[in-house]
Amino acid sequence: MSEQERQVLLDERSLERVLARMAREVVEKVADLDSLVLMGIHRRGVELARWIAADIARTEGIPIATGSLDITLYRDDLMAIGPRPVVGETRLPDGGIDNKIVVIVDDVLYTGRTVRAALDELADFGRPRRTLLCVLIDRGGRELPIHADIVGKRYTVEGRDRVEVLVKEVDGRMGVELVKGGS
Amino acid sequence: MAQALFPPLGKDLVGLEGLTREQIIGILDTAEPFKEISERPIKKVPVLRGKTIVNAFFENSTRTRISFEFAEKRLSADTVNFSAGGSSVAKGETLVDTARNLEAMRIDMVVIRHSSSGAARFLGERIASNVVNAGDGKHEHPTQALLDMLTIRDHLGRLEGVKVCIVGDILHSRVARSNIIGLRTVGAEVAVCGPATLMPARIEELGVTVFRRVEEAIEWADVLNVLRLQLERMQAGFVPSLREYNRVFGITEERLARAPRQLLILHPGPMNRGVEIDSAVADGPHSVILQQVTNGVAVRMAVLYLLAGGKPEAAEAAKTEVAL
Image 1 (tube, one colour):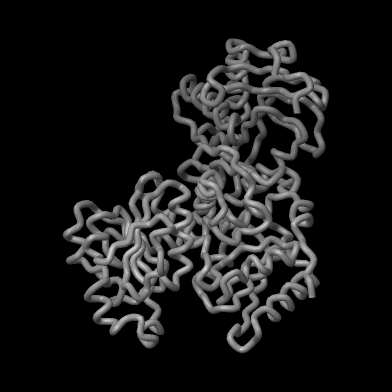
Image 2 (cartoon, each protein chain N blue to C red):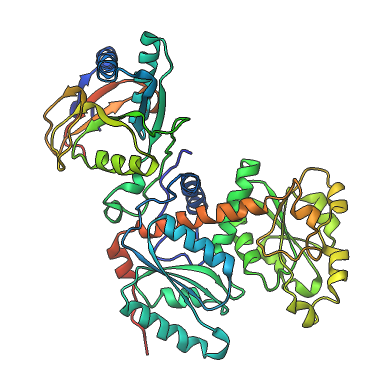
């Protein structure tokens, strides 16, 4: 991919500012922080959830439970995605999610199918008191009636373009980039 | 576990022969997250919802069938068990008839166990559905070998360079054959040990070391995969007596005590306690036999998942006409 086809939407400092604001919004919306569980969607959502949880823990002075959801087995397009669907890790925090306030964290909200799969998977693990959706980027283009409760940034992105969220743990750097004509 | 993409398995899993190292490691890596599903409060994911799987067991095997059935149900497939007494029917005809009936019932996958070597391939070449070999004659038992490899990797952290000795009836064992092929493909060193009467001619050509004395095997190995001595082998004159077999080839605490390192003990089950393995060993700290059973479900889930993940047109293209 050539550099000309990439456009930086958020650099590292801007991304951290956006994440810090999202962390404040989580605290505002979830008064009972003892019941809060942040479940990141594999993979970059997991790292974003950890970042937000660490930020809340630092500012509020209490540990925040996190977990990870891999939605591969709940996708509705297994037969269409080719013969090598890779399954990742699903991990619940100690104490599970029953009666908890679960905030699902993902990097990009697009069609809504990933979130639908995540809700299905979550229901197999227990019954949260309340579930919220927190996404870093809402790029529009929904194919299901799903909306996020907390949004870092909204962009209107053409279907053929791709929004890439970069996190240190996976990509070695932080930021958000638009890839023109990406698939 | 971090996973890289690996070449697709194709339509069927007939054996480990012909699979690459990347494909075998890919199956094991895929099995890792499936272990966790069996620990969940709801031990089910919807990945094969709406798929119909037939377990066609022409030869009895309660534990393999149950393991496949658990794997299928945990993936939300609909399952039908089909068993037939294979001994009284002409085998070729039965399989062709079975293939035609299964096709007519619009099923998606078949798990087949058959006493004839090559039965799984025979069926796979004649139907569009995915076929998984659950043991065919003396040929292969790929999912057993995969679960053995997963169990070894769980405990030793690697397969490459691990020394595995398969002890017992190598001649009649599809488990031994699949293990030899699979383990060698992933870079393990493989040896066999057993009575000369139960050792195939020219077994060394498969790239394995042959030990005539179990003490030598114990001294060499990191892992012993102890095979069940089928009791009809004694009646057929392959071994003089069970007591004699145990005296010469039995895995006992006393023998293991002389091992230079702590050995991992595997057994595909069911065990003849006091014949090929003593109870103290089977239930002892070296034994990972029950973990093999647990891993069996995860490995079979991974295989079914990976075969089902292919594009339907690939399965259709693999279909060949049944020449009647």
